[in-house]
Image (cartoon, rainbow, N blue to C red; front, side, top):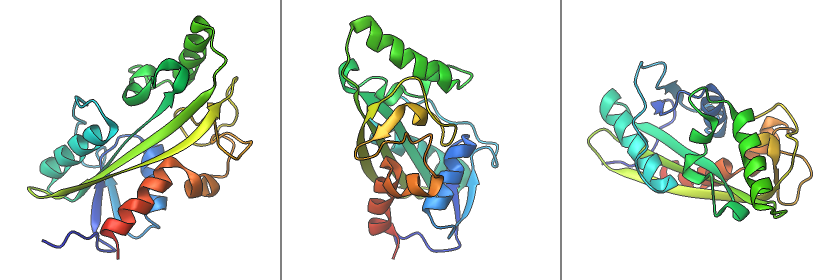
Length: 200
């Protein structure tokens, strides 16, 4: 079996998050016919694994089997050193059923205040998995270190972007031009590894 992503092929991105789908399509240089779980009316599976890589693989396999398409899934999140790596794989869950990330960001700040820590070190992780229907899968992982800032700054990006300042920069991901963020983010690093593995 040829484990390559062929330009122009239809690729199911296993998400209902439109911001994430747009970012992933851009990172793939617009070379694929990207569709989402919403487009296919497919539910997302319960994320029952204990790592980003495990959850990405679970979502990619589920999407590939349900759709018959090659599927790409991302599992990503924010880890805070002073909170022992939380929210980590529970990053989306901290935003609640309404996916309210202003609530999630406030929760991070509140937890840091509760433990009296002024340690603002944090990192973003992105695990990417590509799965073929009834076939193999490839998983990679990228990270970017940074520090947290409160209150949130910027209205670009999504999720925890407005409170995360990547190392070596003074803007949050929420303030950066999307194209600039796409060049330095955890997801960009994971995509570089994915392209090395699957794209000629």
